[in-house]
Amino acid sequence: MTKKNRSVERSMEILEVVSDLGVCSLGFLAEQTALPKPTVLRICKTLVARRWLSQSKNDKRYRIGPRFPRMETAPGLIDALVETGSTAIVELSAVTGLGVDLAASIGEGRLEIVDTTRQFALHGIFPDCVGYRPSPFRSALGCVFLAALDTETRVRCTAKLAATLTGSDRAAAMEFPRKVDDIRTKGFAVREKGYWGRAVDYGGVPTAISVAVRSGDKTVGAISLVWLAEQYETNSVVAENLHRLQKTAQVIGAQLAAEHPQLLLPSI
Amino acid sequence: MTKKNRSVERSMEILEVVSDLGVCSLGFLAEQTALPKPTVLRICKTLVARRWLSQSKNDKRYRIGPRFPRMETAPGLIDALVETGSTAIVELSAVTGLGVDLAASIGEGRLEIVDTTRQFALHGIFPDCVGYRPSPFRSALGCVFLAALDTETRVRCTAKLAATLTGSDRAAAMEFPRKVDDIRTKGFAVREKGYWGRAVDYGGVPTAISVAVRSGDKTVGAISLVWLAEQYETNSVVAENLHRLQKTAQVIGAQLAAEHPQLLLPSI
DNA sequence: ATTTATCATTCCACCTGGTGAAACGCAGTC
DNA sequence: GACTGCGTTTCACCAGGTGGAATGATAAAT
Image (cartoon, rainbow over all chains, first blue to last red):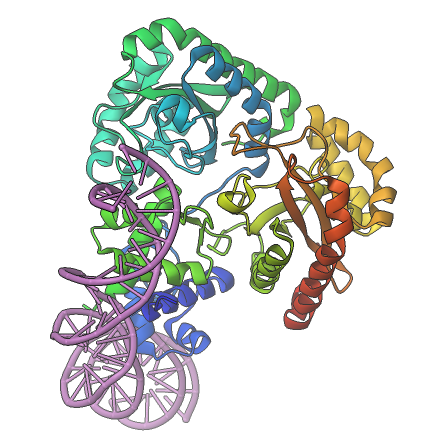
């Protein structure tokens, strides 16, 4: 068995205590974890520096911080979207001959791919993308999803995401507001040039166009057509297949609204 | 300024990448964090040991695990069940040669798959089912779990679920009360014909039989045997392996009761 | 004002535990 | 068979984490 990392274990212990018991003083954490206070202090400082913990100014006690990764997923939504969407995306894939991804909102303006028709043999692109969370500002799925949110939600999510992202993702976040109107009028988004998150994992450079899935007045996810960049021009795919993609998104959204009206009540 | 702890920083980087980008391979994580692979491996192993990450048995990729602190649900049960159940299901899988899924109650009559032995190479079925929440009325896991609840809880949950579900799930919900007695007397449930979650076809149509995991007088989860429909008849699997499945469920339940008696006090 | 108590924080000598380049083993592919 | 790309193991090295003891900081009690 590979060796473990003691410091990492200790940091998890500390975070679990804070997460379970709420706000904690240094001494209390040391007692709970049976670690010496200096050790706890150093680890907590490290966690605070990244905002995984935050520290109250006057009594110095620790609580879970704003940057602690959260995933507030509406469990029913993913299920419902997969159930109503999976046959539709298979049909779309059959008609277009391209790969289709289905992504669901997991809160905070983020998406997770929950189903796909991609088959390596068929489309020449890495198939097992279920579980991936596309970039909010650089992927076609992420952009079209954000653009489709109502203004208030979009602004809130965009600000929050921009605050946590870095590098080219942050640059894309700064640029995003200028792209929103364009995406909204065109009704679809294209994968940003130069963004192909995981060159390692794919068979080739994928290109994608995406549209949002709206149900009632909520934006619940997005679907995209995916193909090998070297195989087709984006323009020709748009000309030939955009209407099919939009139709599919609309069908899924309508069916979802009809079959799961209660999912649309809470805010995303 | 107090010194920071490098290992803790690195572990946060890794967790942030997985949380931001979804499922990740070791090599990809090493590239993203600019750390050598052995270092990433050791940290990930540590995180996996605590189930802050979980690792697909099949392609070894990492995703956020069941014990990663979530603000919403009480994770104690999930945790304990995974801890006591994972060795048992591996043994069961070895003896039967079939895939085994372990699901934990997440409240309101729903389950989430928290561990699995499925390997594509071995069983020819979709391996990455951890995190999936099976249909309450159409999956073998869901049915047997509901049937095993005490009458009052079952009626309440069934009513609530039926109210929110629709389509083929609602149809199954209407039908369910008629199936309960049958399931209770037989002691297991079978996956509904025609129900298989996603579009992705990973080799074939899976079939499953499930039994509930009871601990003390609480129903805490369910486990199932899963195989490729075309490979074995349900009847022959039942004849040969049902008793093993039931034995495993019973062992897990007993061990859970012995090791975590406090979990069984609150109502599910 | 002084004492007491209880925090968090700093210090620093000690040495463990983490490190990472290189080698290995294993699948899958050509 | 040779190759490529994974995850994993090895092992000598020494940075980096450790924790007991000392020091501040703060608030309440005398």
